[in-house]
Image 1 (cartoon, rainbow, N blue to C red):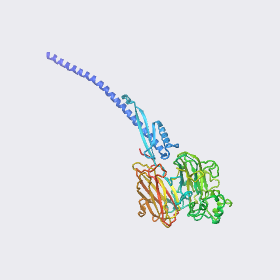
Image 2 (cartoon, rainbow, N blue to C red):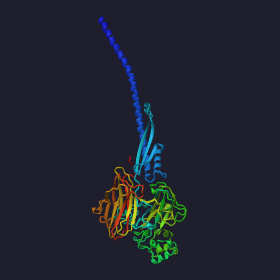
Image 3 (cartoon, rainbow, N blue to C red):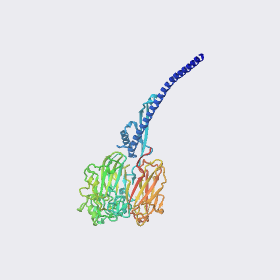
Length: 593
């Protein structure tokens, strides 16, 4: 009995201990669980904040990318001067994506053709604020690079030979016509009769450009009272060597006694014929209908990068060919002599056949457009066409000159030059730049023994660590008869900047060139024979690897220019039409960061 009671008391004691332990465990778990719940909620809240930071960062990055990509195309010429600019365009793109200029920093990157856009947003924290972190600043940066179309031909306001300032090299600009054999050297304006030439398919030039050529006149500084002029803008067949101007000595004497010729100090050189500075060498290759040449001046109000998308400039009173406020557009009739007095009669006011257009353009600078004023960074585009039938009454109609139906029977090759001068003078506009982009058609009537050195292509720094490849193409280059031509390409050699030794990879018509003609960046032994013994109608290409650390003088207009030297065998006569191209490999606009 006593034993039973003792066991009962022991069991009761054990049960009581279990109840106390259970009660004590319950008292610990609840606070522990409460604390754990707070930690779990805080972690969940922190995860929400982290996701918000990531999401906000993604939006910021997209906006920064958009700003950098849209604004960089205005570099290096226009960071924040004339609107639209790189800065204003970047701000607009960022704003469209939901961020204000106050949140955004826009600046030129490490290179003059790079734009850096940085956006910062303060993000309110939902749960991190429970531990005192009320907000977080999120910052994202994008850097874009723009490889602009390559400037070709000139760092100054004149492009091509300028006889009023001397032009011993005698390299002019050129435009052929649809009926001209492409083997004569104009890669894009000659259409028919191209058998055996690069780009020819079914005796038709597959690379023909119906809108022909465009030249750019750029004013980094604001200007006023400027004239855009073309030298010898009309086509007048006077033979390639300028050895037949169809004006007799007697007629020259008569002409010199007439106004306004009597006051011209350059009369003899201008009208006397021969291979002087004033004769361009228009020739009658595949003549057919003589070439009417149309000129159209456009502004850059719609696009500084798509010349033909812009409207034709309307000049002030006195600017147009008629002296009225008229469009800066004009077509010249083609001229092909049919008698020994042909040119004399066109120039003589008393002949009854006087042609005012001819008299004002033949071996003269003709003002195509007068510009009263233009802001810093302004661009104007000069378009030239050789495939429109001459229609009396339509020669000043910009709609016809821009959109008229092509006449494929037109022939002849017109040579000319382009410049921008202070109005009423022959002084070229200081700091201005007249150049070709991508396509540069050239005519050389240089005598042998000379080695003229030309501005070929301006390449600004860029490309990142891997660098870029500069592609240069020379169509029908240097194919002189009775001798040979040597061409040498050299990189920029700007004082105070690193000089690199280029590696040049040459090809001809897409295949290997004869090794005997190549020495580094020089090709020699060029003749007018058929390839491979010559370069008649051949496309020569050179790819130049430009290192990522390439630098040059981007401030000086004559800085950053690759050049080409042409050397002609002594005693030869170069009557060579050729077309040069320059492009950069890869996308022109890209993100580098």
